[in-house]
Structure formats: C-alpha cells, structure tokens
Amino acid sequence: RKSSEFRDILTSLSAAYLFSVDISKHAVINEVHKKAMTQVLKSYNKSDSFDWILHSIIFSILNKIYMSSNNEELLKDIYTGVEFILSKNNIESSRTIRLLIESLFYHYSVSILITPLELLNKYHPFILCDILRSYFPDKATTESNLLLGETLDVLPIIAKTSFLFRKKSYDNGFYSTLMMAVNDLLEKEIKSSQKMIYITLIGCKMLLLDVFPYASQIEKDELKELFFSIFNSLDDSDMENGLFKLWGIFIIGLTLENKIDQDKIVSYLRKKWEITHNVGDLRAIDNLKLAWNQNRGLEMLENEMIVNQIFLS
Image (tube, rainbow, N blue to C red; front, side, top):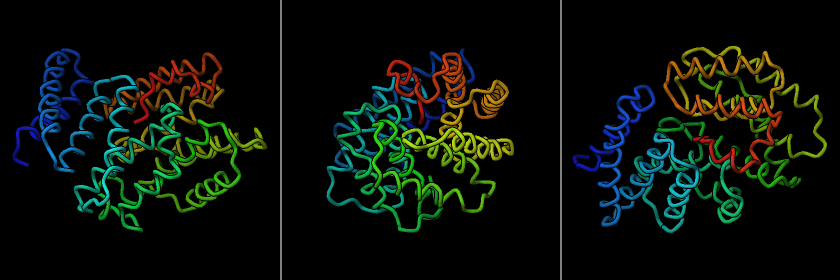
C-alpha cells in the first residue's frame, strides 16, 4: 500500500521496538505513535473499506500493547474489532482479511483472562470462537493462515478454557469437551516449533483442573512436572519463534511454590527479554513475584486491581 497512513503504521510499529530498549527515544517515539494514530483515525472515520477499518483497529490494539496502555483501553479496541466483524453479513475471504481476523482472534482469545465478566457474557467464547473460526479453511495450515497456521485451532481452547476459569463454574458438557480437546493435542508428537503451543495447552489444562471440583493436588503436580519436562528443553530459538511465548508460562508460573522452580521461570523470562526486548516479559516477572510473595497462585487472576496491570497479548 503506497499510502501515508500505512507508512505511518509501519513506522510506528517499528519504533515500538526501540521504545522497550532505549529510554532516551521515548519522547520521539511517543510523537511517532501519536502522528500515526491521528492519521489512522482520520482515515478510519471517512473510510468504508472493510480491510482498512480492520487494519486500523488491529494497529490500535498493537499500539496499546506496545505503549503499555491500561487494559480497559486495550479491551475496548479488541471488542470494537469483534463487533465490527459481527456486524458484517458477508466478508471476502482474501488472505489479507484472514490475516487481520487471525490477529484479532489471537488478541481476543489471550485477553479473556483480563476481560470483565459482563463483556464475556455478551461475547460468549463458545459462540464467538465458532464464528471467528468459520472464516478459515477447515484444515488450518501456514499457507492458508499466515499468522498462526495450524496453531489457529488452539485459540478456541484458550478462550473457552479461560472463560470457564473466569466464571468459576463447572459445566460437565463444556468441561468434558474441552478437556478431551486439550488431551488429544497434548498426546500428539512434540516438535521443536510446537513447544510453546504444548506449554500453552498445559496452562489450559491447569485452568481446567482449577475449576474441576474433584481435581487432586497429585494431578496438578504431575502437570507441573510435564511442564518442566518441556520448559527445561527450551532454547534461544524457542524464545524467538511462535506467538504463544508467555501465556502458558505465566499461567503455570502462578502455581509454582518451590523457590527453585520460581527462579527458573524468572531466569528464563530475563533471558528472553535480553533476546526479544518484549516488555511483557518484565511485567510478567513483576506480577509473578507479587503472586508468589502473597501465595496467591491462580487467585491472582481474580484480583481486578492486579489483573488490570497484566497484558496477556
């Protein structure tokens, strides 16, 4: 696209990387983001192009994440995008459109844990995930889905599992279906590029066990052992590749009580920060330490004040 709006978007997102590694550039980068957002909003308000409006919404979401905005503003953008897609009867299934919907689908799914219950009840994951998934080929591949590839099928599990955890309600039908899906994917052969997805599924299973009235501590401890069997094999390439770099590690990390295990997580996130300069890793360390010091575990995700500081995207 040879447009000033797209150039501003690309400049803004590129500058976001520097924001996390060079504090001396913050003032300049804030101006870059401000200019880009102004351009995008002007075009958004006068545009009737579906892909441009969705481009604008996705950019705004990324802008909020990179600039460490609060969750309320981030979620407003995410659900603006959801509402926009739901308002359209027929959407062209081009690669560009699928890429944009993939991105929104991802941000929606991983943000369920920080979404107010009233919003979750309005945009029910067990319904919305099926709608969003319908825009993609039945067999998701890297060729058909540029952003997520086959891992697209993990998003509904993340969203639905997080929803049951937030509701704190054990529904046998929903629960059994989800647990079966998680176990099926966990039993598949683990490839190097799938380690983070595997850890994400372990995080999902831990959330499911938390709402299951008959789950034993032994089951949860076995799940932690499974997590560390994969976690201990992670290398630098695993830190750089894949979208699910933080979600599963953060969920399991909240449940750890052993100081040695906690130190392993902190050491990993610090090393990952040195490689990727993702500020989410530093926030994760702070929030995990807060949870550990207070012995809160997964209960931390029920504290609205704390959750408002967590960016799971």
